[in-house]
Image (cartoon, rainbow over all chains, first blue to last red; front, top):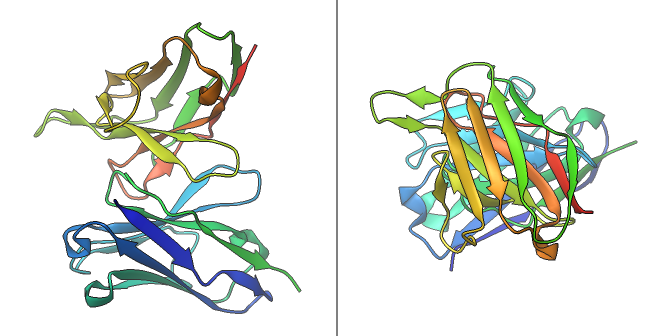
Length: 115
Length: 113
């Protein structure tokens, strides 16, 4: 059974940093690209970042470019999102999702940005 | 960026009736080299993460009931729910994965009339 479990969310002040993690199980992690997708409270879905299976291809949305960095560790079956210079606009539930289709999603981790 | 526009924003359908959601992109999602449209549909129930229903515009994900079907190509797509069930109450999103940044429609809320 494919499972994705996010962690690392929490309350952070504007300008602060957080590192999100997503641990995968139930499939060969190194065969798949991975995404981060976020959803602000009461809003729709926004794709944030993508990393290919070998980390050779990385994309970030313009809204986070230069502030967020996606990475992965295939030995640990994990993908990460380093988030710096956080603003209130970054407040959302952050999901990791598998592959270009986003065929499996985790339950999400909530990031709250507030002073 | 590719803009995805869904219609309607919400709809109420009687149990057992059909619900149809439309999704239009501002540029083609069809890649002629593999004859595929890079369009998916997600269902999101309250308080839960999205789940994939349809990919490549019309391929039903494993385990998805066959009352869900996707159609369309190029720029115009539809998700049809035949014989709506109570458990289908949710927000539905279309999603293009043709070009970066991948983008989603604004969502369509489906309720029971």
